[in-house]
Image (cartoon, rainbow, N blue to C red; front, side, top):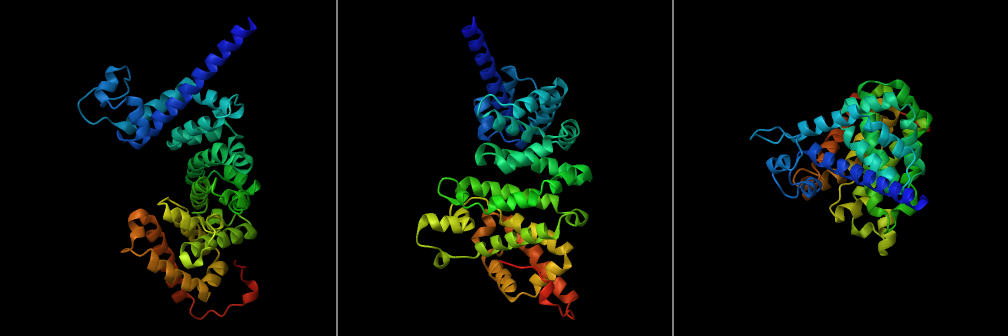
Length: 357
């Protein structure tokens, strides 16, 4: 009897995990509205929406027009909400019985929080979830928890900032979220051959999250000066890494990618954190005038901007790979030049200026 019950529980758990995975993959494809998306193609077996309806999936509109992928996505998410499935997924996230359950639960939560109203619902219903996500980013496995937790947090932070939910924002500050991320950025073990690809993705997501958090000047002012300067210095380090060339690298391959993951990402045509590093840097220096003034008057920083402008200008190969870098850089350069005009008579003291690496 015990064996039969165990087998039954195992069967149920397996079916639940399969359903969780398939639903998450379906939503991923629908949210992007791409029939060619591999996750969506796998689920529909290459059939057009009409054949998909005939097979029993009745969420597509029954007409000969466009499939309405995102509209279908919204319908499914609303049914997930009404059915109470979010409660079940949240329980699975908190107490996973199988190693990958937490990751798949986070994947589903990432997809459904594409809708801001779902993100707000989750923040309101699960008051500890934001703290749990930050703890997962701090303590969890890089692939299975840190990256998927960040994906959810990015969407929740959009809601927090747009609705100015200061109680939730204060959790980020109380948990010292900026320091958590920078400590992880500086963790050398992630910059080895085995982890470098995942670290590049993690850092890119993390800087995107920080940029969202720091778009508003009043939010920037809520963070300690130490956290602001530490983040600005790290962003500046990313900027410097972007202009290194082959002559600046170590001969040993493993040491080279440990030193410069930005160059590694560009060599392998991977999206990296540079554009969000620029925008995050800009968000802080716009609000903290003394920090911005220090960098504007720093000759090495001006040389850095010139070198970046040459590398990422509109006629360069990097624009086709990631045009957001050129766009972000233009904003930074324009801000720097305009501020120089506004402060031509300033005579500052080095004693009050933040340190740089």
